Length: 297
Image 1 (spheres, rainbow, N blue to C red):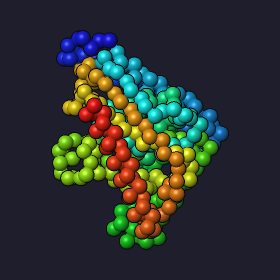
Image 2 (cartoon, one colour; image 1 turned 120 degrees about the vertical axis):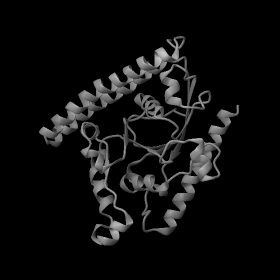
Image 3 (cartoon, rainbow, N blue to C red; image 1 turned 60 degrees about the horizontal axis):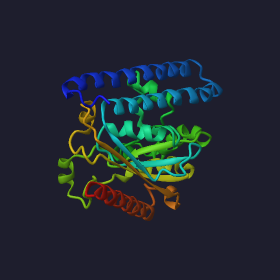
Image 4 (cartoon, rainbow, N blue to C red; image 1 turned 90 degrees about the horizontal axis):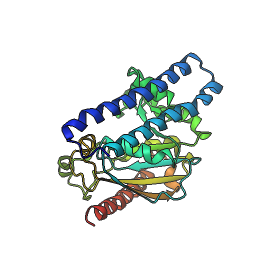
């Protein structure tokens, strides 16, 4: 709508409005977290779920509106039939830009339960951010390094047990857990350093998603393999968005029925670990093929 304006004019305005949206919706979420802290009653916490998710979805809606106001962008969403807000999903996606979070939040807003990210336990101590994430029921995980476990063997399995306990609430609350399995944003430099067999993706890191599966695997109805593609914006995608230069967004979803690999002991079962690696690599090759088709059409 406003993409005809010069980029040097658009960028500070769009950036300010995205920040304002975060500050506004984030303030309500933060206040909800304060109330949750002051009134530690499970019934009250359950009552807060809907208003907290409302402000999360409002943030996602406002981001979408800002994107289409400042950019003349076409949207393609494929494979989203039969998705359900009352189901449990494990969503794995490629990661190219900070914009991915905005795009996935918009996609989830009307189709699936509000997305959650597994967060490091240390984030609880970050001012405002930790409180907001806790208010939104983001699951926190406390993982121990191998060297630390060697010195404290009594902690073996403690990280999984603690995370499972924090996920108990999700047994009665439809949930989407999002995992960017590459572990970092894609860049050509990182891709060249890895020398992997994927054309458009970094090597998937199975440990993070395996941890998620060990904590919640029995609850997931389906795995959603999401491929995010920005065919006409090969450079800095978020910067292009702020400058009104975003042209096309493609969200391709492959719905995969749950299987035995959503339950298992990744750390101690060698066969399970091998099969899990193979399964994730196959999914990643499928995503890579899809992305290549969109980019070479």
